[in-house]
Length: 242
Image (tube, rainbow, N blue to C red; front, side, top):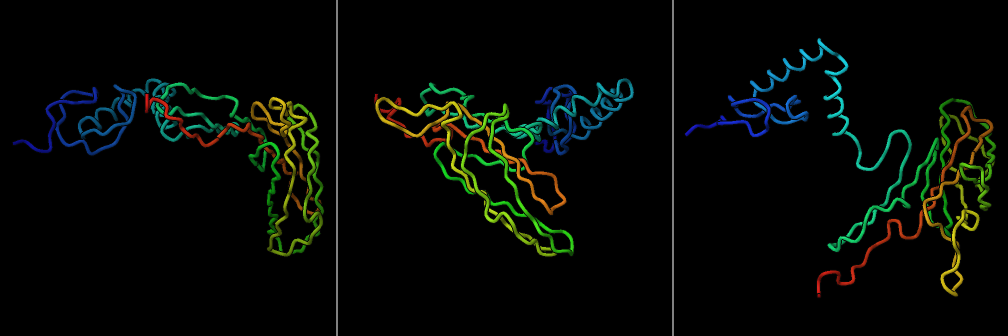
């Protein structure tokens, strides 16, 4: 009985294998990473060097694309922060991806997700990397959308003035009422009066300035999600008792 060898390749990357597949490498025939034996590995290495010398950019691009696909997260983008909550079908096949739960957040230092009607508390810690005490005064701008629409939120900082000890830190709390009445949300369900909601993710921004700290102003982003985004699903016997 033969052991440690394969009669043929199952990956479409070269002919007969000559040993156990113990090396993980890039296969130029299938354009993906896979396990291969020493002979296949050396053959692909030679192919890679040949492509690199003949056309460096084209030779490296397939490997770069493969590695990027392996390391890329499932639903986040490095260019901007996206928050995606999708509906999932429970065997019914009647739910599709919901784009109203996707939030595009640009150029923010602090990100908080919330829903209409909530009171949010965001702790922010200021660090002092020097051996000199610093007197810090905080100024918070209005919360507004990227287009400049003022959300009209009531927000407060506590404290707004403090002494930052040498090589120490101080935590302040930003609290706000998430009011969606100015974000284009609806507020009535039939004849019943309900708090204002949004029909898709809305992002508002505020700038926090810290006088006495040698840092640029902090941009705070609050992404307001519709009620159905990330909701817990309770099945009603879909396809089970028919």
